[in-house]
Image 1 (cartoon, rainbow, N blue to C red):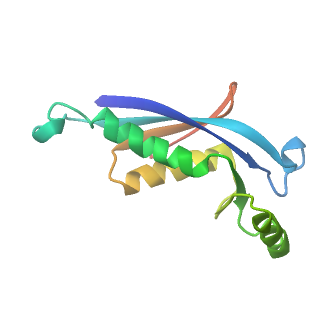
Image 2: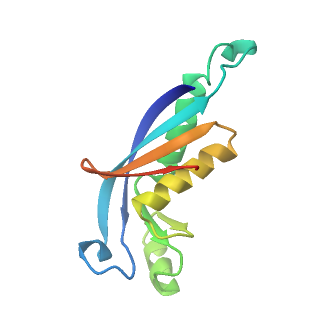
Length: 140
């Protein structure tokens, strides 16, 4: 199998609802994503001949997702009162409402799916919550 890897980072805040520890409070991370693409064979024609994918295309897709999550408050839908959401938005804060608990595991799955939707041959996405703690998602 052939493969490519690239990484991107973003800064965002989140909290874990129904969690009993420090992470139930609003806090932020410098999230780091490492994405792996794979292919059994290299492309055989066109400008990407003998490549899994052009690194420029790959980096643009990964960095686009990172940019969409950068400097925003990641909020699991239904965990804050509508009035709280409205007040934060009214103050000009950037919120990204997500249909899942904002764990590193779920963010890895989210990024994987976003890249797969773009047609990239994603093998694995790793998301570092801290320099020492990493989650990953790969299709089995």
